[in-house]
Image (tube, rainbow, N blue to C red):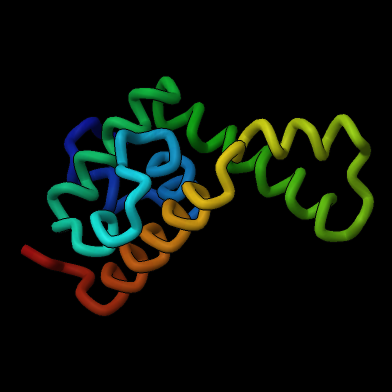
Length: 116
């Protein structure tokens, strides 16, 4: 994956976008997030990827989060796994914002696949 901001929105799957946004300088104010322009979201995604390390690290965190979340939802997670999952997403409100914004980005991508 390239490093240009537009690559982040055009290539990242939902989960990876949510992880990148969670780790970005995205504000915690829901109204500011909801009214953000596409260019701003691209910038946040790029900075989130950089904060985590790189796109491969974002993908690895996403996969681990998915594994732990599934175990947790099924009631099969150990105490250590529940603690690891909680450490990945310490702010539930921020996680909700990141996931919601990622959903809207993906929805927009589907309805307008070539915004150029």
